[in-house]
Structure formats: C-alpha cells, structure tokens
Length: 210
Image 1: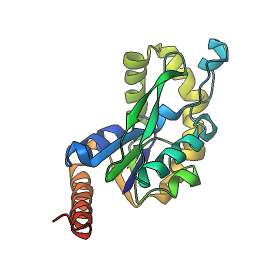
Image 2: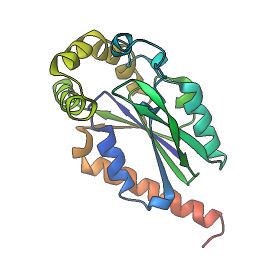
Image 3: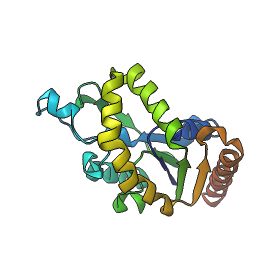
Image 4: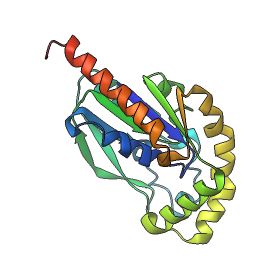
C-alpha cells in the first residue's frame, strides 16, 4: 500500500507522516521524502543553484521516484538518493531501503505528477493557512538549511508562492482525504492510521500468516 501525503511547503506533511508512522511497526513501513529526489545541480555555479526554481515539478527527478515506487511495490529493494540542501547537489552515497507492506511518500508536488499519482493507493492533502506555512518554512530553512531571512523571503515571493498557486493547490482535488491544520488534527490522523492497521491485518490474513 502506497500512501501519498502532499500539501504546501510548511503545511505539516512530515508531522502527519510521523504520527502515522508511530501507529505501525517500523518493519511495516518505508518513509520516502520527495525532497530527496531533487535533480543534482552540482555542475551549475552556486549562484545559479541558489536561484533555481525548486517548487516546479521539473525540479524533481520523477523518473527515479516512479522507478523506486514500482520496485518497492514489486518487492525489490531500492537505493534512495541523499540530497544536500546547502549545495543543492546529490551526494555519491545512497540509503538502501528494503520493501515493506506500507510505503509513505511525502512531498509538495507528488500529486502534480500523474506518473507518481497513479502509484498511490491513499492520497492525503494537508491543508494549512498560508501565513503558518510561511513561518514554518522560514524557521526550517534558517535552522536546517543555512539560509538567511532575506533569501527565504525572496524565494517565497519569486517561486514558492506562484508555484503553490499553479501546481500544489490545484492538486488538492486528487486527494482522498484533506486534513486541515496539519499535525494538529489528531482525529483525522487517527482515522487514517486505523484504516492502515485494518489493511495490514487483512493482508496478513489473506497471505495466510495468521
């Protein structure tokens, strides 16, 4: 079962994913973040990398992401890329991931790419007000990605907001479930977690393991 969790930057997608992860055993789930699949820009000057539009679907290596989702569904292991957000480049090392009954894939653009969308069994959209999302992105990029306040604001105005309007917000219509206020909506998350546990229990019975 592949579960997609989408929503705007800073909406609380990772928080929702982590709460769902807490409801199942570690040996039952693989967690994949779309951010790991940004295209490698190491051959570009750093100034050009910093100015790249990372909120457009073309910024993501969707060919590799789709390939990995298909392999995991087929019971094959994959090598997840490791992305350096400070240099906007992909590291030589990878992370080996074994197939498990549940795959959770999280990212702002996973519903905007039809090939990724069609791999998903459950599609969740985290819907959070713009002001809260901007504040969270500002805090994250400064603390985790070595960004300055001005650079975050400039990027938000130049690409993040326009791309959200053009690609992310319209993709909400593909969601099976919309969760308001991100990880604070515990009722919605508990309902989804319960559905996942039911599916796991059913699959185990069908497989003849109990």
